Structures are given as C-alpha cells and as structure tokens.
Length: 255
Ligand SMILES: [Zn+2]
Ligand SMILES: [Zn+2]
Image (cartoon, rainbow, N blue to C red; front, side, top):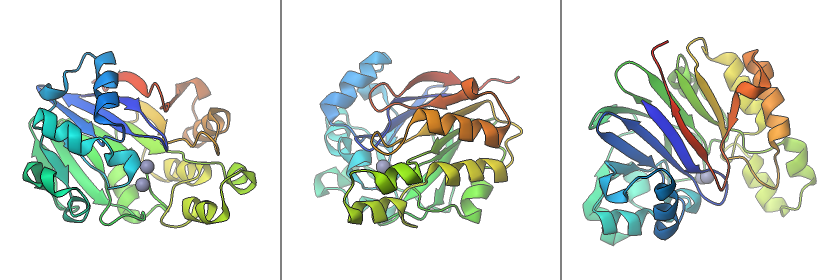
C-alpha cells in the first residue's frame, strides 16, 4: 500500500491511498481544475480513481468533490450526515457508509471511526491492504479512546498538527476563530498530537507525516522536535505535508 498528498492545510486537503488496482482520493478540498492539475504531478488521470472518500463537509475537504465526481463519474463515499451537506446533483454518486463499520473499496479496506469536530458526522479512517494499516487523523478537537484504539499499531500515520498554542494565541486570527480552532471541536495542537503518539502503540510505524499545518499558526520547526521526542526518533524521520506540494508517494513495506 502506498500513499501521497496533493496538498494539506487550511486552504485545501486531498490524500491519495493506493493498493493493487485501487486508488482512492481522500477528500478533495481544491477546485476540480486545481485537483486535476495536482493529480497530473502524480501522473494520475482522475477518471481512473476508484472513488472519493470524504471525511467531512468543510470547504477545505469538499470544495472540489461535486465537480470532480460528476465530471469523471466517481463514487463519493460519505457518512449520512456528511452526505446531507453535499449538493443534490451529486447524490446519485454518493455511497453512504456507517462510521462504525469497516467496508471495502476494491483492494482497500476502509475502517472509519467517529471524531469530535464541528461538522455534521465527521469521520477519519484507517486504510488496510489486509496486511498493513495506514491511519489518517485530521480535523479533530480532542483525542478520544476510539481514536487511540483505531490508530494503535498502524504501519503509517498521517496525523494533524494544526497549530502551536502560543502562535495561535498571539496571532492575527480574530478571537472567535481562535476559540473555534483551539476548542474541543476544532483542531489538534502540536502538543495534543504528540501526546497521541506517546499514548498509542507505534512499534510498527514506518512512516509518520504531520498534516494540516496552519500556515499562520504553526511551523515545521516546532512540530518536528515535538513529534521526534514523542517517538524517540530523529527529527529527519518526521514527514511534513505541505499546502502546495503535499508530499510524494510513500510506500509501506514488509520489512
Ligand atoms: Zn480541514
Ligand atoms: Zn474541518
């Protein structure tokens, strides 16, 4: 199983997960045109995607879903709550899933789990090829036992490191936005994310990539040492997803 990001941050998110003949786009927070352009960098023709799996209805995760899905006739996987927020003309492509039931799309098994975030029915995922597990967690206000159980013993983790608390406090965001981001239904700060890494079983971990970094309220120079300390590893091992470039394919191997 391999995975990549075509961009991650408050201005748009989309992740690629691929195994065998199946390639999923997880979220599509860029315009359809921009998504097509970014997929070209990975030599992916959008019409060959196996589907779009949506975490929740915020614009930085769904803004391109409608046009891309309709243009390329792609199934859109969403919870009933998320689907209720999608436009009517895409509903014929929607396949609803339960946050509590694992399902398969082609060669990839998708294990959703519910998360606290200010959306209708948000979920995040563990993807599996039957052998390895890739955990994805972004857009979460606080950690929960359900989250920690799902992300334990993964071979790769894509983990939100949204903001540094001091940078957010002292930054230019208006107060209501500061409260929202830092709130229990907002986003994980760096320390919260590092605590998750300390708590869960990371003995199988081959890849860790920090995701959804705020360009205004965070810095890779703060995230890397925190994550490295939590995992007791070298800072150079901590991957970072960028808003423009995302990150290139990473592969989970048998070693
Ligand atoms: Zn987001
Ligand atoms: Zn969100």
